[in-house]
Image (cartoon, rainbow, N blue to C red):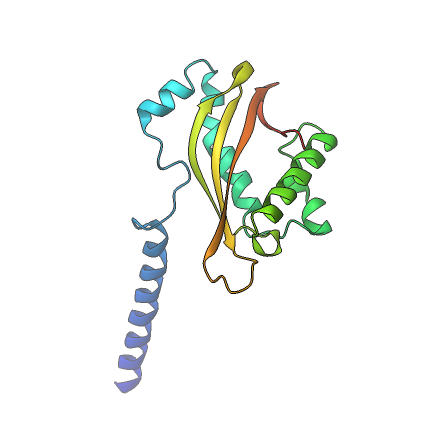
Length: 172
């Protein structure tokens, strides 16, 4: 009798932990990529693009920025990661983007060039049909005696070409 009560108590505890861990990820505090964009804004932004382009940018950009968040950018391992390189049409384009991002993170005093969070602030239509994503990179402050986070506001250009989205590097 005591053994079955103990087993039931353990099962209830496991079920409660499972419930709490799954609802914590989908609750209102979860950070949703592009959650700040309304449906009306999305319709205006994607109105001149093919249907598959509009539906895929939000998902694809979310995957890209999720992969680069919490990565150390002054590292050869990050530079050689093929899961990040696949978003660029050429190795030269990737190298230009990477160099510019490392420089910007360093100037923003983000510790170890490692952003801990990347937030999408907005999307605007840019030149030649490309889209400009306004972003905020947040990371630990690298300056002494500063316990608050450092931030970097940056705009990345994405272009629909050959049936897919590519990140277009800015000039260094």
